[in-house]
Image (tube, rainbow, N blue to C red; front, side):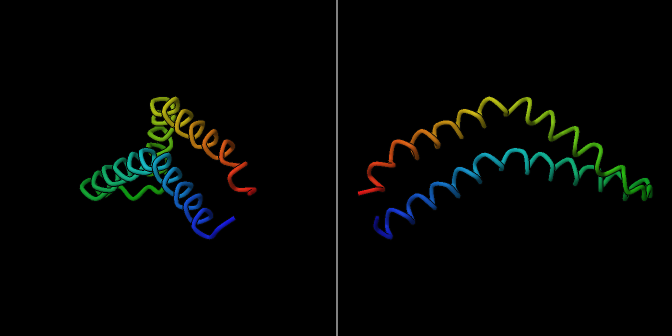
Length: 89
């Protein structure tokens, strides 16, 4: 097993992780920004107000992006498992 192969597998794993987590993180970030702007304009400083909309947004994002996330992870896993004979040489 060469260093190039290990680096390629690691790079592909990191890329897949970023690709899968990206939409949910961006959704959570945008909802958090909107809630923060709302809190700043209304001067409401309730700590729990920022968590509930983020949780709801991430759950809705999982419902929306769930099939795509599952397909992406499935394709990565299939590529990884089919490359086992190449890695073991």
